[in-house]
Length: 549
Image (cartoon, rainbow, N blue to C red; front, side, top):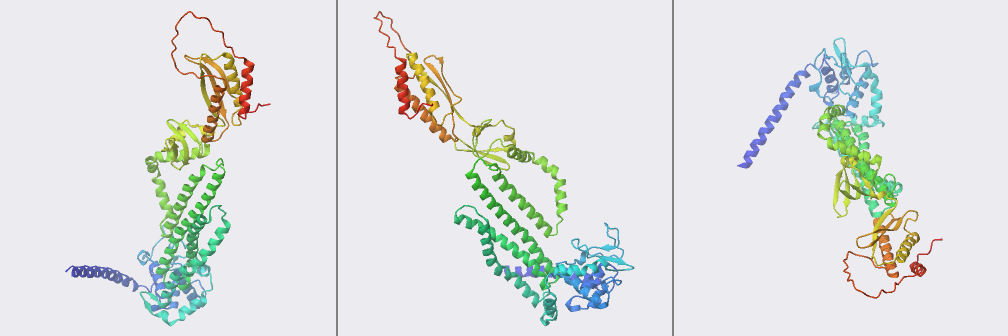
């Protein structure tokens, strides 16, 4: 039962489908009866196209659509009429008869003249009113030889004669003859034939030109992804030269050209993006070799921006291939630009923030920055936001618009790394020992290879509540956290060993209870300062810290 219902719906659809075309055909037949006249642009165009059709082939009648005052002899006019038809077919210039004016007094609204331009991309081809009739203009007649050479750059006259004289051309099936079907088959097969050798040749060329310095497997993958779209792009360009040779009907040529003109920007975008990826890979290699190179921050931004820009341009070319008015689209976008700008204020602010960061360069990838609760290493500077790796190993995504307005402390640009601490000694430490200890600390700084020698501070600073405090303020000449931590450990161990060498104790918060009793006053054990100095020198020599001369 269900199958019968499907058949019923199927025949109903077919009935309405053929009824629709039958009504249109009847309407068009009424116009065909007037096709022997030249009263309007419609009649002139139809007269020309109708008599070039294989079923009604009469070049002498088709030549009547040309301006009778130009073109030379009748034979020459017939030749020009045929060539004009071939130009239309070869370029896929398909007349939509429903849109051609049928008014005898038709006037072009822009030029304010009795002319009709059917194809804006071919302004040389237009019709004009001469007296009471419409004809292809003098400009069109004079442009036919040039347009013919442009449409058929190869010597196609011999091929045209073969196709025209071939008896199988007279037998049509769905509007196409056997030669046309052979041409369609050829257009399908030729890309498969050309792709492999062309891709191999391009891969060889790209490998010779690209010295990426990466492993062979990675380079092979990158090159393979690049040569595929380039090969297909070149093949579709070649197809545009081949299509006119087969002299398809204008409608078929129109669809074939539309396909090629859509696919060309698609493969062009893929190819350009592949080149961009190769370029970014090369720049990333340079950044790894030299992290301070001037374009280190621009690499992620360039990658995203260039690929998006390429896609936008490719889409515009595709719209143009589909006969969509790109200028009108852009104008519409500009009119709606204000509403878009109001709705995307934050996005635009972030884009300008990104531009500010790239131009001003307050920080770069790898720097340690702090700003209003932000503390971590910069991992990536993107188009919209900056990615920061915190010391908890989490990721912060900070909008560039906000980051550009913050006060940023770039700790990654430090020339020296500061180390400040307080060394607390017990109150029982003798002054000579303190003096020797301070001098020894200064010698450690002066003799260590990774400390700043011209600016540091080591002094007996104050009397604390429970200790004698020595200020220890020095700077390291290191470039990374790992180096800083390692040098800090070395200095701390040297300080601790020095204290043991001089028998100095570090203080910590304590409370001492004194019992007053009458005892014999002990003899003060006063250390000898020269002895302490010699002891310090022996200690420093043992540690490999030779005296600076």
